Amino acid sequence: MSRVITIEPYNSHWVNAYNDEMVNLKDAFPEEILFVHHIGSTSVPGLAAKPIWE
Image (cartoon, rainbow, N blue to C red; front, side):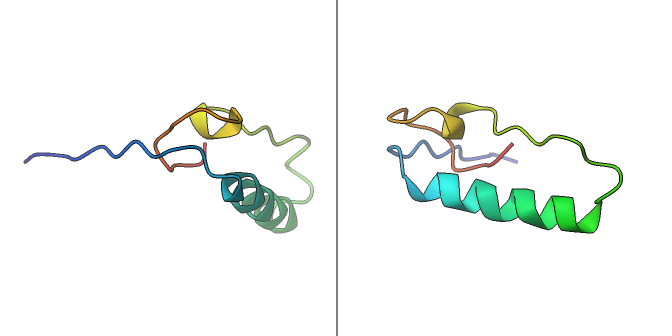
């Protein structure tokens, strides 16, 4: 089984996608989640990355 890893140029929409997911997580687990941090290559402005939010 082969896997293809795609590296894409930086996309400013990644920030919005992360923020949307953060809101979903905080809404789903309001008592459990204190902080949510955007990490990984999609969190670095200008850096090419795999389009995966971590």
